[in-house]
Each structure stands twice: as C-alpha cells, then as structure tokens.
Amino acid sequence: MGKPRLRHWIRRVRPDDEVVVSALYREYHRPLLAFVIRLTAGDRQWAEDVVQETMIRAWRSAEQLDPDSVSLMPWLATVARRIVIDDRRRRDARPQESGDGPLESVPVPDEMEGLLHQVVVSEALKALSPAHREILNETILRDRSVNDAAEALGIPVGTVKSRVYYAVRALRIALEERGVKA
Image (cartoon, rainbow, N blue to C red; front, side, top):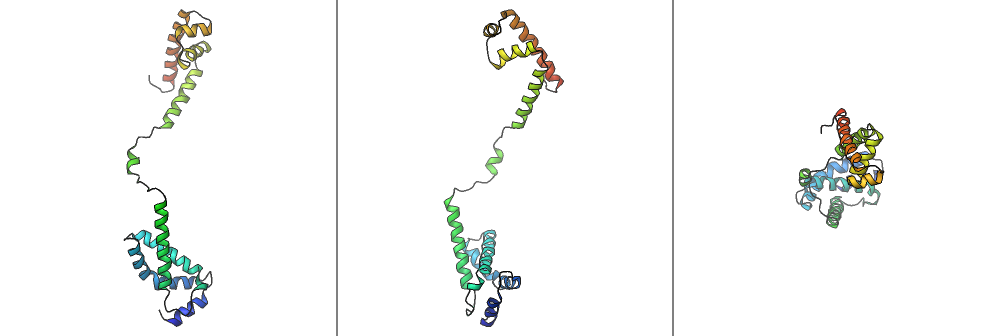
C-alpha cells in the first residue's frame, strides 16, 4: 500500500467510518493473520480473535496513526503481538480448564427425584389418621424405640406396636395410591 493511499485513509477516518475499516481489513487481514497464526502456534481460532481485536484497536486509534507511514503493518503486528502476550499471561494466571469429558462420566444425584419423593411421602402422611401420623413421627422420624415412644406418648408399649403396624400398612396403601410401589 503506497503513501498517498494510507495518508488519504487516515485523514478520512472518523469513529463511524465503516469504509475505512473495511479497506484496512481487506488490505491487512491476510498478512496479519499469517503473522498471528505463527504467534499462536497454529491456533487459527485464537489468531482470528487476535486479528479482530487488532483491527478494532486500529479503528479506535486511527487519529493517532502516522499519515506519512508507508504501511500500517508494523503497527498492527506490534499490537497483535501484545494482544497475544496479554492472552498468554491471562491464561497462565488462572488454572487450566479441564474439558467436559471427565465430568460427563461423574454420576450426579438427581435431586429432583428425591424432592418429588419427599412431596409424595409428605402427602401420604397427611392422609393418615392423627394417631398413625403421631406414632410414625415418634418411632420412625424421631428414631425412638417402642419403649421410648410409649413413654413420650403416655400409652402402653403394646398399643405403640399395634399402631406402628397399622400406620405402616396405611402409609403403604397411601403411597400406592400415589403411584409409589413399596
């Protein structure tokens, strides 16, 4: 690219001048991309990102560029090199990301299933008589022995045993009505 053309572009540049940006991109994209691909060790996607960022910086700094220079390539190459260096520093500053491969094989408990199960059991417990709910609460939920439950409720041990038996049976029926197989 010759001096008169570059001088003409730089004098015309305004922040919203898409013609100049397109012309700069057409003129410098290929050589800059080839340069940046070498800097990024062949990573084309990263190189494309660097070239795009370099063009954005050229567009933002257009008023500061030297209109007497023959080519913008030295300036663009310096900016691109600095972007690559900054990217590498940023990548080195944080731990390496691992791929999704190992995470895909890790079993994740389905919390929704447990939540739905709790809701169904809760609804089934509400369907029981107050005496059956009370005895299951004491023996199963509070993990009390038959003797401790009898003492807490003030009823005989034999009554606790029979209520537990009939309460568990009623709970099983209530769960089956809600689609849970025991």
